[in-house]
Length: 148
Image: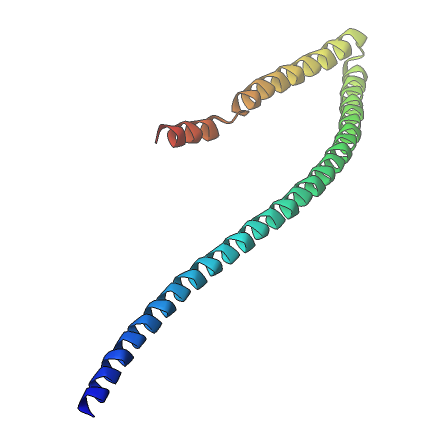
């Protein structure tokens, strides 16, 4: 009878080892199957995110173009208003000088001088601001990134 228990124990241990090996094999297969499923889901999620980002970029591009067009129109109207205002200021100054001194030539010379002074100031401001245009810091950052 002892032999029966010992053989059963030996067989049970052998059977348990076989069962454990089968479970481990199944566990690995399950893990790989889950990894494949997660990878596919991740790929699908990135693809969906890419589509959404593309749609968002298209919508923002359209809105930006619309805003740029409206801004250009408003700037044109603003510039026209400034031109009319400046012409009114020059006319008022010219009339005031004519009324004070009675000289048309002095009025014309004063208005011309003010106009030239304004143009010089605008030119210098434009040159100063145009020197600020650029992506020097961005380019420097990209170069640092690529050098790494």
